[in-house]
Image (cartoon, rainbow, N blue to C red; front, side, top):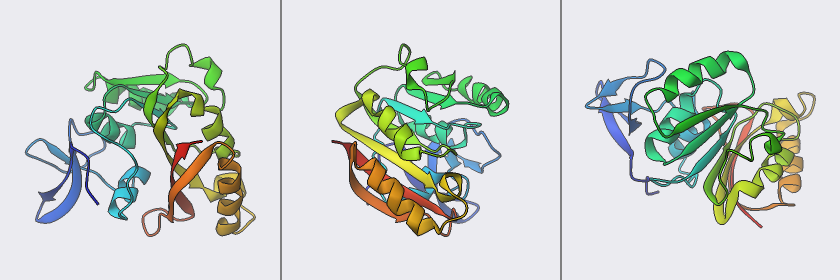
Length: 209
């Protein structure tokens, strides 16, 4: 798997780890301007560690849904161009705003990813990548609703949280249903469980139909 420009394996305390260039955010190790990308705290980082290709390229225009306090969004913004980061909760948004202070290409939006009409006037069309990591029911519906922002050859990088969909069912059954729902708007290119980094999560890479 070829890593995009701006993502490398670097040595931190004698250990090779995935890394991007940028200001540290969450206490991660830093060496020579590079910051370690902790796959246990990042679904996209885990995808790289498992050999997946999330679809991120240097300079990409990105919409990030479920940015939380900016752990993964900061790494994505280190590599990408304009990165619109949507987060619903006020408390993590405060942290995300701090992350954005050192990244002029990261634009935090205090919005609900289930309602893209509330930020459609801000987010540009024809984006290269949609990253989604939201803890809600109807995760496929969220991805389909935000498909409008992607270019025809854009990519969806989705982390499906089984327990957010239905905590009473087996994760594999939940994943199958979400993928079926997702196929109404996307063609699935790759999907893999994120164990051992994130339990009961399925990573999906897809492109708009």
